Each structure stands twice: as C-alpha cells, then as structure tokens.
Image (cartoon, rainbow, N blue to C red; front, side, top):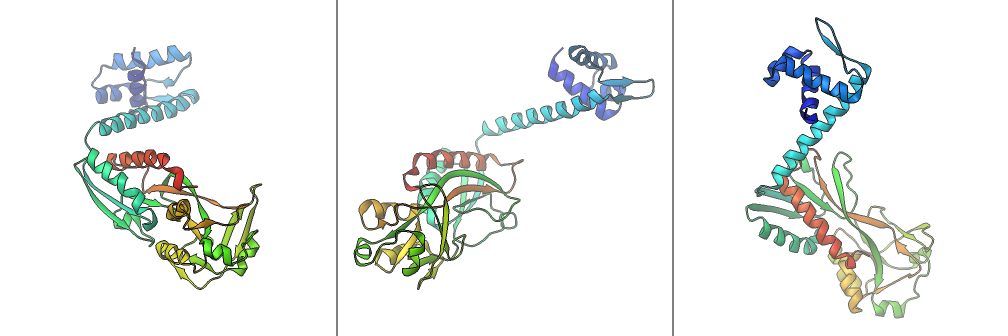
Length: 300
C-alpha cells in the first residue's frame, strides 16, 4: 500500500477516535482503513493502536509515531503550497522600508525584480526611523544594523564593516592614530544611530576587541552629511563601507589605523512571519541575496 496514504489514514483514525469515523471522513470503507493501519504496523513490526470494541487508543510507540508523521505530512503540505505558489506569477503590492544609505544598491535589484514580475507594484520608503512593520503594513525591511524587535524574522544577506577614513590632506596635517585610544585626540564625526553610541569598536589582528569613547563637533542621522563633511576635511568618520568605498578607491579618502578593523555587522532582510511568507516577498529576498553576493567589493 502507498505509505503516505497509510500515514494519512492512520492520522485520521487517531484524530477521529476510531476506524468508522475515520472511514466516513476519508470516504473509505472501514476495512480499507483497517488495512492501511495494519500495513503500517506490519512494516514497523510494532503495534500503533490498542483496539477495543468501544474505542482505539495510541500505544506509547504509536503516540511518538503519530506526532512525527503528522509533522512530516504538514511539511509536505507546506512544500506543495510553496511549490504551487512559486509556479504562479506573483502580483500585488510589495511594501518595503530600507535604510537610506543602501538605496542606491537596492534600486538595480528593484528594477530587475519589476522587469521579471510586471504584475508587482512597489511601495518603497527609505529613512532612519524605527517602524512597526505589522502596524504599518510593511512586507519587508532591509536593515544595515540588527533589528531590535525579537519577534521579527531576519535573513542575513551579506556581512559588512565600517571604514575609518579621512582625507589625504587631513592625514598629512595630523598625527595619525595607531591604536583606538589615539582617536580621543581627533574630531570624530558621529552617526546618531551608531549601535554603540559614542564608543567606536575595533578588532586587532588577533580578533581582540577594543573600544574608545569619541567626541566631535557633529552628530547627525545622515550618513551622506558625514560623508560630505569628511571629504571636506572636517574630521574623521567611521563610515559604512558601502558609503565611502568609491571615495577610497578614487583616493579622495584614505583608510586609517591599518592594524585594526571595525567590528562586523550584517545587512539583513527582515519580515514579520516565517510561516506564511508571500511569494512576492520570498522571490524578492532571494534576488537580493544573489545580487548582494555578487557585489561584496563594497562590503569589506
């Protein structure tokens, strides 16, 4: 007999409390229901059900087998639903919120996604504020720093680090820091939402962490403002690599303190629910993961 059918029949007997009730639910003869259960017991070499004239009950082994087989059948149903959903054209509105700093890297992915799936409409917002995804109806949030809400689901897209940078002119006119403690003598341009506040954290070549309290004459929630100011020699900036990698490559900015690197963070796709993830969201996250993996040159 078909094993999956037998598992389904066995589950219905347990849930209905008897062979006759299960037969009615399955539109199957009582004899056939009994044959399926007997087939499982013969295959396993154990008794799954205790049978009396009034009712059936699970044996200890039967209880374990029912719990595991019920989960297997549920997983198969979920796989069927997912496969069916993926085979249809996603449609509807995809509502996304992202950090402003990575908008320019998301736009090509968004453009590609909308070309692949023309039935999708986009509701796209960028900023630095803390949002309530469920209350505001967002399908997806792309963050460069850890999510504070523990009930949200997070999928890591790529690791990244900050770069400690200044202009060549600043380097030539100031004593360059060799260890994190030396940063106390510099004007440190600060990002308002840096996760460690005014403590900049680094790792040495052995992976040991060191932190230093910094100070400066600018505090802002705009990474682009800090980029502009550091490029004009106003101080030093512990900058997201994806903000300044082109400036470093072009020589407009230089990296400082080469024996240390900033601690690692992750760009993540965050969504409210793992169990019922819409196809449009799943496909967009998969495309994001592929494209971010291809462009990690700016995520050092």
